[in-house]
Image 1: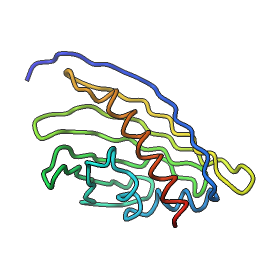
Image 2 (image 1 turned 90 degrees about the vertical axis):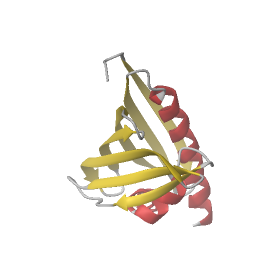
Image 3 (image 1 turned 180 degrees about the vertical axis):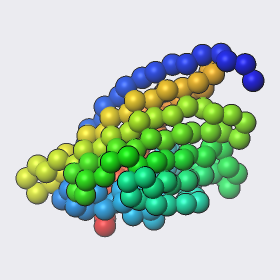
Length: 153
């Protein structure tokens, strides 16, 4: 494989949820809940292959479309402050190659009885990958599903 390109983007996504920071944080910390809301679209199913939510821990998730793997995401946690913040990196690969990676920071900020969630994505796409646009769209969709989950949970 030859080197083609690298492209970078930073995006900040904010949502306000009618749930406490503790409830919103729990939805991130619990791998079964994260699998429900964390898919980048309705067509993608997430399979948890490994889950270790702790500083230094690693999650491995496979993204499936119609039962077929289309990408693997390996996340490593660098900082966790319960009910306040999560900082981790994700490395995203399709079946053939590295697509890119993201530094993800999530802040859970109490607002009244709810939570303002601020997610900042610093994404690197490599070798012509569409990861920059896909990451932002996927996280937008996931955060909307998180809001729906918090209403029903």
